[in-house]
Image (cartoon, rainbow, N blue to C red; front, side, top):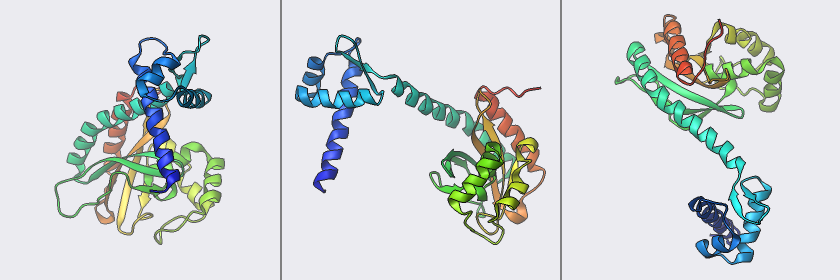
Length: 254
C-alpha cells in the first residue's frame, strides 16, 4: 500500500478511537484522559481533536475538555431516517409485489442519480431485476423524474446542462424541453412513468414517498416488461406510496 494511503487510513483509525473514547466518558473528557485511552501522544490527539472541532464533529469546552459535536447529531438523524425508511417500506413493498406480481423498488436521490436501496421481487422466471446499490440517471427513471419535477423547471434545466441528458434507449428524452413537458404535471398527478427510457423492453411506474415535512425523500416503483405493465397498477402503487409516507409522519393536506 502506498505510504500516503496508509497514513490516511491511520488518521481515520485515530479519529475513530478518539470519538469512541469521548462516548465512553459521561462528561466532556480531558485531553489527558483521551490521550491515555487511545494511547496517542497528547500532541497528536490535540491536533486531531482541534481538526474535528473545526468541522463541528467535536466541541471544546471553555475548560479545554472535549465532547461530541452537534454535526454528529445531524449525521445521525440522516442515518436514523434511512433506517426508518427501510424498516417501514419492506412490508408495504412485499404487499404491493404480491398484488402486481412484479418487482417493486425503493430508491433515493443522490446528486444527479437515483440509488436502489431496497427491492422485492416476485418468485417467477421472467422478472425485472434491479440490483440494490445500483444507480441510474434521474431523467430515465420514473422516480428520478419525480425528483426532477419536484425541483422545478429551472433546476431541471440545470440538471440537463450538467449531464447532457445522455441517451440510453431510443425512447430516452435528450432534449430538456421535451423532458420537462413530460414531467411537469407528474407531482400533481402523483406518479411518473419510465417508458423504456433506461432499458429497452422495461417500463416503470413511480410514486413519491414523503417525510413528516412533506419533502420527497424516496420513491417506490414497479418495474416490469413493457408489455405487462398495466394502468390499473397506478392506483395500487399510489396507495402504497401514501401508506409509506404516512408511516414516516406525512399527512396529506386536504
